[in-house]
View 1 (cartoon, one colour):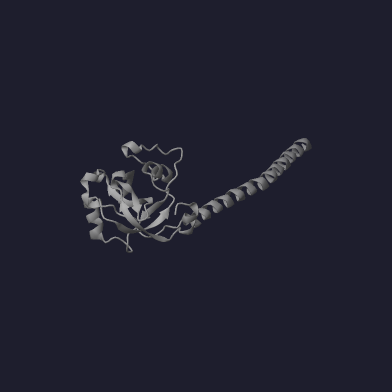
View 2 (view 1 turned 120 degrees about the vertical axis):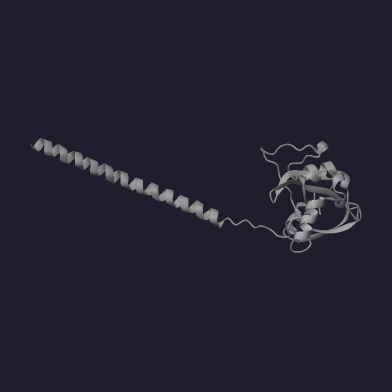
Length: 206
């Protein structure tokens, strides 16, 4: 489960993971904004039945519940079975601030850094809602009590058709303009030369 081939094989597929959370090594990723509210994504190590450990992105909480002690209902102690998607997490770029594990400050879900710090396999499972969506009553209950809100079990496939249309249309306009001026300029120059010649001939003819 810790090889890159696994991610490609199970991409866009649901997986079921059994195990027990290690809340003392919980990581807060963010800040993240959800529905206009600032909060954090929670990533927690999960000890599986065979003793191996993976990372689980449990969901989002409001910033008021950053302290674990303020949300006891989120600290599930018994073994669980959860549904999720395998994800490769996020990769830092030159604009990404550094994370500070000792202060539990993580700006992105960097699997390599998180798994090294937590002592898990470099595997991240993003927990999803069991049904098609979270009921409004359950959603607000989770919001109020600091229980992580998992992501919806859907994928947003990038649709670049509009972008392609704009790009190619712009290129067409630019090309047409270049062609117009490249054709028009020599013609305009010839007309100007003819005009000068007519003026010259008229002058000398007087």
